[in-house]
Image (cartoon, rainbow, N blue to C red; front, side, top):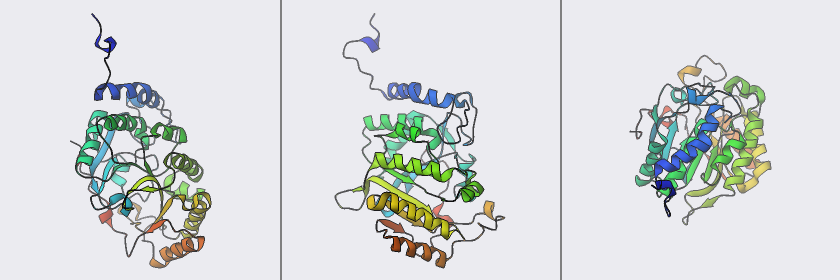
Length: 327
């Protein structure tokens, strides 16, 4: 008897076959000795071991829904199809998504289910698929995206990250991600050590941004010049008392990339209860602090950028991590 896989003209075109191919080639190797991010924990996540991100090889997410609080060229009028993954390789002390960063919220989903979620968000009218904090699940996400593309996923894919990444891992996404949405949080290694336990943050993030830019290229908008289809938007969240560091970040970005990227300067920092005891972080950014950063950006010549109007800091930016859209 001729096995089905050997039958003339037989092609592997099922979701299961596609995902299994990637799982065998990428996920198994990556999870058995995990060095996906700069933490390089070397744990066997297939056996249930966890490193800094707190996650095993099983995909865990906390929410999949239309999200309206991204930059206007991403949210549009219908929303960005955001999938919030659980766990994080930074776990910043002031994190607004604190519960999912620590893995306190979320449920396990299969790669097959993740593929379905991408297609469901597209069917809901999402302008894009927005992968939020995805670093520790890159191989699984690559498998699910490949299957989704084969099944009709056509909207852009956004990779939304804190930027503590390894370029080698990002290369697994080459051709699958259209828009990179990285943070560049700190220039100072002392700040990144205190707030994100990563003294090498800037060097690692700068190398990651270079790889993201190589993949995404210069900005490309839709025919109405309203929605971004390809390119990179780098976010910088201004922190209280750290305007000097913010200015160094902006100078680096503009001197490195000029007008070939967009820069989003945010003032939405919200001091949540878990940061209340930290005297550096227990207040919001003042209007004067934010204005000084914006004026510096203008003096530099930054024109491709976003700013937040008024008092944007509010917990309303934080969605409910209640498992919506996962089942």
